[in-house]
Image 1 (cartoon, rainbow, N blue to C red):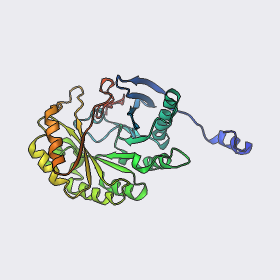
Image 2: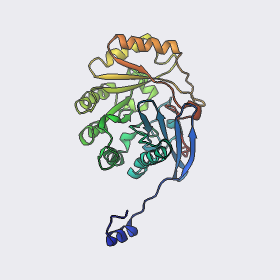
Image 3: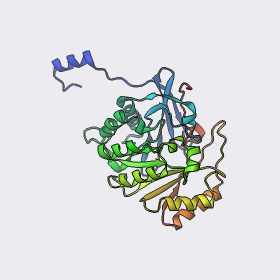
Image 4: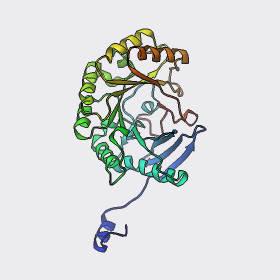
Amino acid sequence: MSGLAKAFAGKLNGVAEVTGLPVKTDTLSKDGTRKWLFDVGAGNAIETVFIPEETRGTLCVSTQAGCAMECVFCSTGRQGFGRNLSTAEIIFQLWWAQRTLRASRGMRAVSNVVLMGMGEPLLNMDHLVPALRLMLDENAYGLARRRVTVSTAGIVPMMDRLAAECPVALAVSLHAPYDELRDRLMPVNRKYPLASLLAACRRYSKRSPRDFITFEYVMLAGVNDGERDAAALIELLADVPSKVNLIPFNPFERSGYSRSPAGVIERFNDRLNVAGIRTTTRRTRGDDIDAACGQLAGRVVPR
């Protein structure tokens, strides 16, 4: 940094350092998806995924080493929780991707950031919010609020805090349209059941940079993909501005679940569309390198 005064630069040398995380692996999928595994110490690692598309490049960023949510269909949750990442470790993933991809692609490669990697972002708010502000700041990365998305399993008080402190696009991991099933799939629902979660979504929508809340819904064969489930989901989202992403389940070892057949997913998609709910079926990317949704596990210490 040649523009610093010598005295100030000397002071910085004594109190600060600029360093990156060690890169353990750099893996490229046949579809162009790229995954990095970073060492964060103490036997823990995090994964970051870049998904290139014709009109945008999306970076999936981790906020924790491991995850404490214990969602039964997610390999990251099966690995246990290591620790929260610092603001520097969160923003490093964007810095590394921009630097690395620009060198190979010759342009600003990352247009969108989704905090959907390892961990529950809203359980690391003290480090998440400063990282988000850096992503948005014109003097840093200059991303638009609608192009930065935070995903949550439904930590209701922190959803309200995010709306107050740094409202960006919000994605809610829903995966079930009634409490009995969601209690089983996502233990967090026992603390923040659907009524309180949807109320928080309605509050958040008033501050959101987008005109909808995204709801993620993993399609599990014979579990949450039937006509009754579709009808219950339509009723649940009736008064919430919504977009539903249907996610074909990405299997992992000893998961105990299987992916809904393509025809079942298509019928579920059509049922929601007919009811007036914007619905898309996510195309699986990077599954050949375990970079698809729900497959990020890194090398965290089981706990």
